[in-house]
Image (cartoon, rainbow, N blue to C red; front, side, top):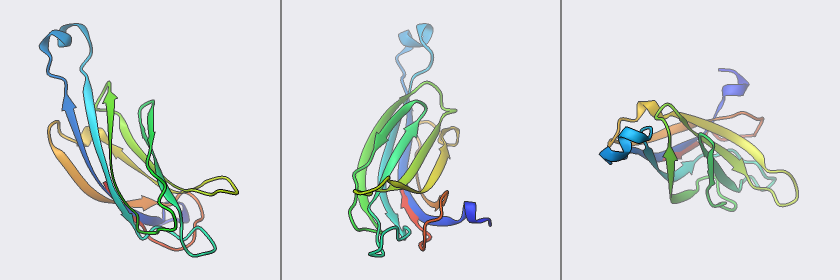
Length: 148
């Protein structure tokens, strides 16, 4: 395992993809899909500040759409319980979650990221997982987990 791919936390989440079943629209428009995303929690995130803590939040991307979770101050094991909804053109898109450390006096630091190929999510199925947060920078400590 290279330093680039070091596990830096775990994410717990729930995701569901629903198809628009309006038959009249199917004849005119491409298939419409809605992604429901529930960011539950993260754990064992790396220490990013001199205090041995971090101020984590998530940037969330689906295609060209973006959202941002709340910042959880001084917390390596944040609980979010936040819900997001995205309209999608295709189930071949990816859900990208980038864990960031919020800094007041300097640029926010990336702690790691998770990519979830949405083609793996069956329509109407609720997928709930804990995933490792892969480090893309050189943060110290922590092998975090994110619950979505």
